[in-house]
Length: 317
Ligand code: UDP
Image 1 (spheres, helix red, strand yellow):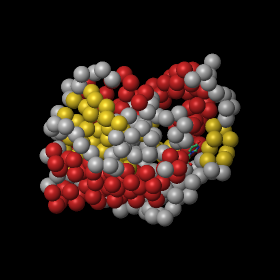
Image 2: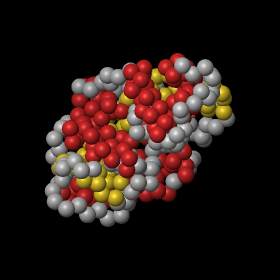
Image 3: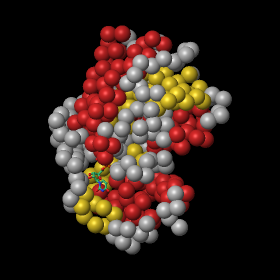
């Protein structure tokens, strides 16, 4: 396959690029580098089946030659980023999805949308299955991301129904691993860096809110299987192992040997979901997929990467 990945220099896009190249495909990674980072794909420059295009996906996209698949992964994805880049976040979810779908239609390519558990908002059912319509505040600060992704799903289904484009929608739950941005403000990079520096971990609110974290390799496997499947309806991909943020902080302190404990901060964003856990019944049945890497193993693969990055920057001895 010849595959275009928008957001190809981002955390997920770069891991997907690695996977598609390893499977023998050709990859065009597109990114405007506002939150993506060329360092994530530096090891791929010079690879004969890899090409990078610096381009904003909200502008008209021209790609030479045939394409078999378009994976739309471009978007600011951390609450800190989309609070800082609200209009770009709305644009890439809305205009960017439209452009990427138009390209898929033109090339007769399969289209896969990176959607999110945020379409469920601050959920009132637990765990969240794909049949749940969500509980999203459109005008709150997180609305720019949530609604952009909800619009993107609607647009994807419209292209499928009206134009017959082969589409796939993955709803991604909290994912972590190497190549997350050090300063993206999410809980995993924050906690790991604080722990490595021997500082207390900043738990927002009382820490009773829950998340379910999946390691990036599990997500990549799920996306790969979904693309090759014939399933048009959205599919949750996430690890159902759920923890409170307080418990998660304890795991990180334990794995890093950090003795500084935690510190509570009154910094939860408005509409920060109180609970989140994927129901993965559908992924199990239609993709034969389930996560394989538990949080201890995943963190043991992630923490050394952060240590190395901080050492490179001279921020850690
Ligand atoms: N959080 C925290 N400390 C931090 C960063 C985040 O306690 O340093 C909390 C945040 O309030 C939220 C959860 O961790 O309840 C997950 O936040 P994140 O920004 O990683 O992503 P989200 O799942 O909210 O999109």
